[in-house]
Length: 201
Image (tube, rainbow, N blue to C red; front, side, top):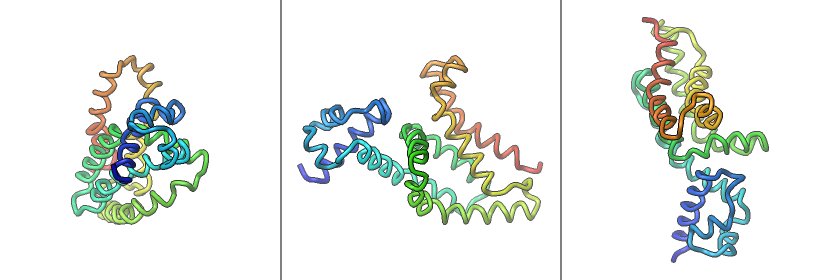
């Protein structure tokens, strides 16, 4: 098996374990077993669980970034862009549910560790969307709102149900299947809520 194939197997196995057990609950031995390699080989590729977690995260970002930047840069009406963004964003987080918790953990531990990833991947795309929002506000096509608040509203409303999942499931008295239905509904609900808050008629 080639070096690339082995690394791919490790990342797939790690993703599965991190998704089901989180950073703290995951064990390197379990990841090695799932990848059908010994623990020594796993440590040869990734010296620590933290390094492996970061590799899994960056792989997920490389999946997310192209689609999300494409949406923000696309030449289409703002409301369509918001709908496409929430649908894609929530869908991608559903597939990589460990990402929000990992981001919070990393930012608390080291506020600058992920800065380069997000600035490089999303900075230019956001600037283009910012121009679009400001022009629509100036023309009276949407209510006055800072583009920064608009994107924070969309992102926060999309991420929170994943970060607070254990608490919300309990408070809302939903089992896993019912909660997944709520998450699916949020793909359109978040967009509708945000759009209705800024449209002028």
